[in-house]
Amino acid sequence: MARIEDYAVVGDLHTAALVSTAGSIDWLCLPRFDSPACFNALLDTPEAGRWLLAPAEGGTCTRRDYVPGTLVLETEWETRDGTVRVIDFMPPRDEVADIVRIVEGVSGSVRMYGELALRFDYGHIVPWVRRDKHGLHAIAGPDAAYFVTKAPIHGESMRTISDFTVRAGERVPFVLTWAPSHVDRPHSVDAEKVLETTLAFWRSWASQCTFKGNYQDAVMRSLVTLKALTYAPTGGIVAAVTTSLPEQLGGPRNWDYRYCWLRDATMTLQALLAAGYTDEAAAWRDWLLRAVAGDPADLQIMYGIHGERRLPEMELPWLAGYENSTPVRIGNGAAEQLQLDVWGEVLDCLALTRNSLLKHTDEAWDLQVTLMQHLETIWDRPDNGLWEMRGPRRHFTHSKVMAWVAADRMVKGVRELGLPGPVERWEALRETIHREVMANGFDAARNTFVQAYGRPELDASLLLIPRVGFLPPDDPRVVGTIDAIQRELTEDGFVLRYRPAESDDGLPGDEGVFLACSFWMVEALLGAGRRREATELFERLLELRNDVGMLSEEWAVRAGRQLGNTPQAFSHFGLVTSALELHHDTVRRSDTPIPPAREKVT
Image (cartoon, rainbow, N blue to C red; front, side, top):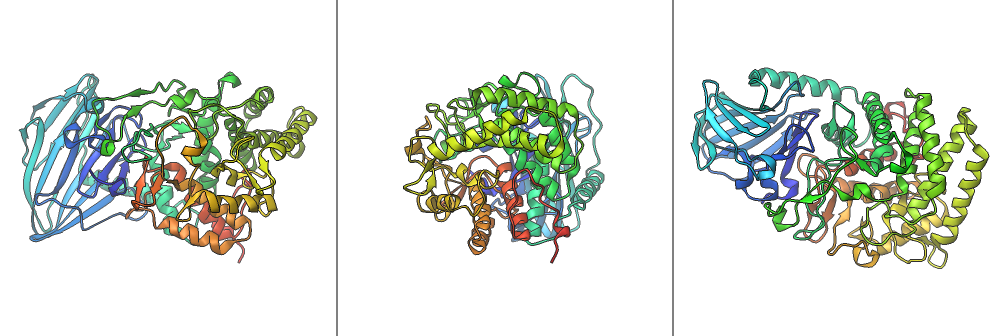
């Protein structure tokens, strides 16, 4: 199987596909991110569905990259007979979904091989395929696909094969279109025309970026990747485009990340606003308000891309899993967990929105008051914590810190903006929570905060204590926590979320270092006045990106490879905010906008 870092992503702001260095599209869900996949080789074998288009002699590509500022991928092979390029992209969505591949002869004459194997419902259903005057028409239940090319094609073993030669200067297009099976056949797009409109769309979007500082190329690529994870109709941003890529090869820590997590909210907004993308930030905030509306007792840690609450978790036993990492799961049972930190994350996010002078309404504040009133009654309960642990509930320090954040942001809304609310009560609660955390979440003998009350384990979420403003970034107790995590919770300088064997998270096995947490360490070090260390760590993290700038969730230090679902929004948000903080040589609280780099005073 291809390594996780062998994949690049192309998408249409409704869904996304993963393209390997061998020229194979091994993962694509249609019509949206969380729909059943029709290409499933990522989690099984090519028989589970893929679309290969590469030189007949095979092998990995010689070079690949995105057209700058876009999500149009160019992959090249230098063969004995010449050089060939494959251009992959998905035009921004209209009524139906298109994925376009153009084979371009660069030099010489190269024999090409194509293999299209559609397998709907996560590889479970082989469609009925027939040929008409336009090309191929595949249908299975609610799904229909149309395949158009001027290259020769024929059927073989439930696959569509194309064997042809491309010469220098020739361009051979392939277009695969998905539509609901009950509607008329959609019009076929002109591959070359939609290539131009797709390039224009992305270049226009990239030109809005206000960041002009250090690490500009890395930031821009991460921003384009984050845009690719955006579901345009609602503004929701999925955590990743994949499910069940393992946190430990061969292990059971395989989860579905094709949903929207509230924990990402503030970092999402900070990254987008700092780069000048106010429209995306406003759309994400509006998605958030719709998703969390209702009974505050029903607040979830994650929602579907339309704000759906029910995300039932189930296993797909017919898929072998990535490198035999089972089970393959769809849905996510963690949506039903109690995680107290989400109240703080939502209120922190809305405070950032208000402080950024984006449009806000009285209805948003009314919702905040309702959420806060409920949190007042439950903040002292044990919960499952930020990391969705499936072991026993406990009093996680980070959860209590985020309850303090909720109270703090509501107090500031009243005191600084004149919004209505029982400010004295919230001030008293804020002080109560702060005292409790300092009494129970801090180990004075070791000079470090701990993962949970009454336990010695460390947790990377403790690095967020200065970020949210609970203590100053240079406070000795914060510095002590940084030092303790560097000593006890890192591998090769990169940060683990926690040590599973010690933290009783209810699951067997282990996991890699968590890339977002390592970016948190960058900001924590910078805040503590240790810029050199922060810069060195950040630049080492940049080296973990693949050849086209993508990061997954985790990194396997010993194996030297990416782990977990990809591309991971949490990792890319961390990259953007860390780069901006390093550029400004200062850290800001999570409810304070990072100014665009062009406004930096030098």
